[in-house]
View 1 (cartoon, helix red, strand yellow):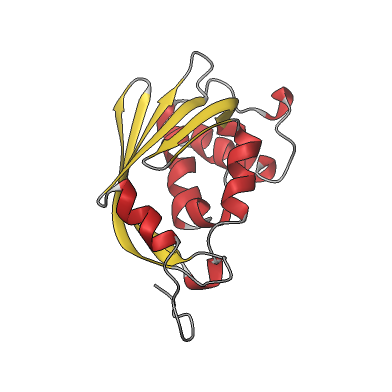
View 2 (view 1 turned 45 degrees about the vertical axis):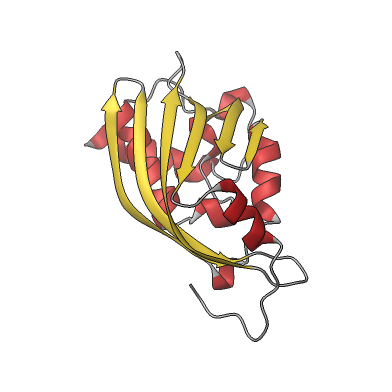
Length: 168
């Protein structure tokens, strides 16, 4: 639709802008938020790169996964920026659906290398993300579950890998 195209075009221009309230994409139709998330996951690889559309997230958004719980969009982006090596890591979006008037759910796989000196390898895992929107239509929470335990994830983080990195 024209609205979806306009929203996606606006979202693209706000990706690199500051997260000031005026840059927020307020009250988009949830299907448009889903399309923006789909693009950010498939093309932006945002779990790895941090390259996401800031305009669809509340500045005080809460990001939870089995090993971390962070509040604040800028804190989350800073953490993502120093975690994965984008040249040797990838996200594959398996499915993304609007599941209610305020929730979007996505299934994906992710694998790669972390950017620590000991070169830890994260074997490809399957994950599920629940996005919940607030009254302004912005993502207020992003909650992930993984196919591996938090302990296994932490062990992988601290296990050295030897030899050249290969894209996972």
